[in-house]
Length: 118
Length: 399
Image 1 (cartoon, chains in turn orange, yellow):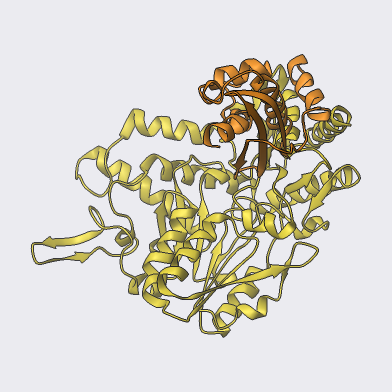
Image 2 (spheres, each protein chain N blue to C red):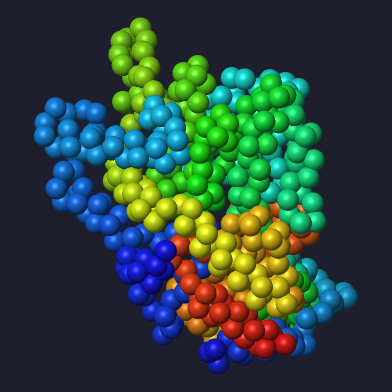
């Protein structure tokens, strides 16, 4: 198994930011009807910038790891900056090249889509 | 049946995936193609490509003969007559044809249409649409704990009873004869979705007694884009066409048109000629092996697979190999099926994950999705062993 995928499974097993957040300004939800994945992202925004972020949900290792990494990355960014992120940035955060795996790329993009639509 | 010899007929089985010899276990989604099917398509385009039923020149005659010869082979394969075999693009189109041309004309407000909870979306969504459009009642036959139909009798009295012969998730082989009998006793017609049975076992439409039977070529060693609808002649004759245009007419005047004879009435436009020819050659191939032999091989494989997997994973459907086709859906507790499939893929083992176009069934089972390994005549016990080893690895990685 690749080191990159092992890292993803490590995050899936133990993501400290996988928890609900009270007092979040924004709760963004995303679902993938094909595999039944559901992700909820909680953002606390102060002075235009994200000061805290967490997530909950059920899904495969890639969608869960993507939510966790995105929540970490979100801190210090504006909502506008987050909504401008693209699939290249998500692949960079994950350390996985999913450009030839369109089905797994959808899993990876679920948390970002939630923020874009949230 | 010599599996090693059969494997040599399929060029793609030489493929290496992620540095490992590929074990293709996704035949429920689509099968691989033997060299002679691929060669037949190349020969058609290299030697006699021309439109069918149109020209009088040599090439057109040759392509027409090849196209109609394929129809004859397929008719014999399921024990139908040639005029009862309609070429379509896949099983979904076949079932849509029945829904539009038969269903729209014969189902009215308050009438009942019965399907089962284990249907593939292709035999689910069309009837849902019909019921909504006609204000008819769509009813579902449930399954028991074993994944077999429960309470089939209650489908009696439906205008249409449309059910699958073999489940693409549970593997369950339904008693299609009984489905037809119950449909007929209640005064309705029986539609059988045979997508997962015709490629894997002998099917005889006369013995079964169905009014319509749908199946698709690509799951039975033929190319994609070619499927078959069998319909009883007396029903097809009474039905209006499904699609209108070229080749489905005898005469077109400004005032009106006359429909062509069967089966051409239902084949508007230039058909998938190479697909039909390819399907004919695939049927030749399967006949040479023998469908009884194919079935025997798959029973052997699936009973071996279930024996090895039952202590490792949660298996859905009947545990008795004789009651199911050569596929097994399962879940590794606590691991998403996509992750199972990705880790197996790293070792060159190709399986399916998701809801397999059977979302209502997954809802009924209380699942979001499942993983599925599905076999065909070229799969081996060694590949089953690799699957089992791969699943053990998944459990180690996610422990």
